[in-house]
Image (cartoon, rainbow over all chains, first blue to last red; front, side, top):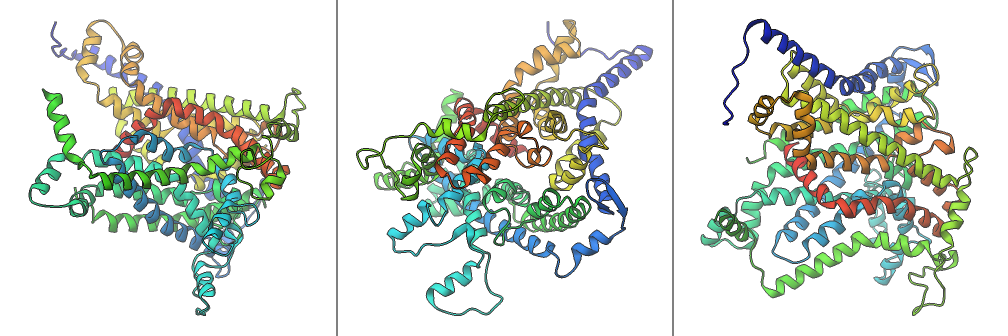
Length: 324
Length: 304
């Protein structure tokens, strides 16, 4: 029997069927929606209320906007945290995506053992962040770390890595013996070390998405360009990069969001010391160490408003450069 | 024929490499893979060294380069140091491992069930308010976790839900997933509507159609959602540390961090032994299921 369309029933029968279908739909949706309402939507409003109180384990007193004014003071800890978050993001996102793109392009060539390389590079992503951050903290260790040990082969002086609060520009200037103007320090070496770890974790994940994007570029385009005499580099530059731009755009968005909520590995490696207190770390610390729920909540609202604005601006500017 | 045609188009995508380039490529890829894998190797090697060899920076202290013997006893020693669970008398490490397994199982089952149900409603049924509710689900994806973290934590305290230090706090808030609903709905939408009409003629209702036809047809997508949530929950740390304080309610990554801040801080060899035991289960699962990860990333990555 061919699947001819069943004629929709008319009148009363149709009404009762539509009602039945709607009831079934609400029934199926209710568990998920109830969970979202209670644990995602309601907390946004509840968080606003909390932020207006001197809230420790419970509401002590209503203090209006005091938590906000305190967070916005010029010497408040919010500004360095915002700076660290944005620096972390600006450093990690391009490094991570650039490396991932190169790796994806290499793995896209006709070579053997592709799946071995894919599995190996993806491994860090699935590993528990607490465990891998603990491993890296020891690789970086000035006493027992193999990173300093390996660098000493090339005659490089031992560095403090995660324990270093000096900026990388300051360190570089000291090494070659010039003096920089006071304000120019660069991100702390500790933060840069965390960026290296972050790249190690996520490069395989990003590469997998790039590989999928590469697979979607029609082969005929390369063929046509090659007939026109284009070589390896110009194929990459004029076909791969522009046609991959939707993937790159999507990846940069999720990577930026990822860097803004980065927490576990920073907590394990430095606990926010040495210039690594990002927004997430600051909020968490206020709650976990000092039980300042009201202040932490106000910080969360302020920091995420700023971060939302930054993301939207980035989105707008980058979105224009996407070729579809 | 069709297959032949596609394979020809495919093969032109990548250039055939000259032997020199090929070897340079292999060398580069192997070096990068070594960088990716060295931290794991270092963890495993360190976990069976004695502390002296760790401090003296011996990478391979065993024959033929050294005289030490592998210290497998580091593993039981580390487990012993973590202590025992007063409730059950089992090692605390095992207790925390079981906590993690239990919480992970609850969340995987919960998310899969609630997501499949909601995805079916959005993909297959008509009802008033459908698009508004779907937008609500998507909107929850955009609310950052850090924004709701503090109020959610407060909700776990005594005068509210009173779930602090309980499995309820570790599981219930995570039983629904907007990502899961969205992904599974995408796959449900790809199934032709005619199939439903045919099933209706054969007398199947919605529930039977969902269970006997939709779910089997979209198994890879559902498995992907389950696997990603397995990884995320097994590695959960931030929330689990915030809403538990009793050792026997800790999840394994919090237990690991506690150990790292305690005895494991200076005893690197023991810290690595515990890390290896935390990482092992997840790597085993990953090796057997890695194709679903790649497929899952590919499909979510391009549709997200």
